[in-house]
Image (tube, rainbow, N blue to C red):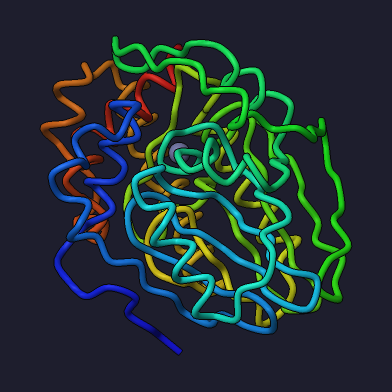
Length: 301
Ligand SMILES: [Zn+2]
């Protein structure tokens, strides 16, 4: 099922992500009318909502709604409309997969009535000012703070399944959580996975390319057969896409490490580029050149 809540153009993940990295959504003001929120039935009780920022997961059923990430405040009303059209119910919990603004931007609105749950490092980051690319990201208002935090994992017993929220250390940030829906057989990876595109790895806030690779290996081991995967960015995916993502991480890291080992400068490694088969993973925000720079910095810092 794929419903269009509001019809209009043309947002790529790059725009949402760029806004997240800018740290606020002011740029959205003149275009928010044009944002569409689409919803896709994934499996069981679980839906994926896409629009503006990171992919949202939603468990919708007799106990109400658990939301995984909440994009931006500007689209909170549209997210609510989308949830209503899927059967609605009371929004009880919002789980943040990590602190970035394109996954937590709706917290201050949804947190007025729902309980926000996140890894303890997400709360640490959202309650005080952060800096990203020389930009200052202000602390969230108290309504947007996680109320329940965890260090390694927690469970929410909801809509007929034990939703498991598990910390994956130092992959994309220092506070990443992956959400498992065992009965529905769905995983929301947060930004541990960008499907079919080079990922943003937040080296300034605890991310690390080698440890991200370890996280993805662990996730593949844990993934049940036939699981549907909601990535942080990109289309609804399967284990095959997650395995391909792991191959990309390993092979491109090996290429860049080989360049470092042979004494090449970063400019020389960028000029040599990556294997042609990864060219389609280049996108507006994380170009091949930027991906090489990220891996290079992560491997050498
Ligand atoms: Zn992120």
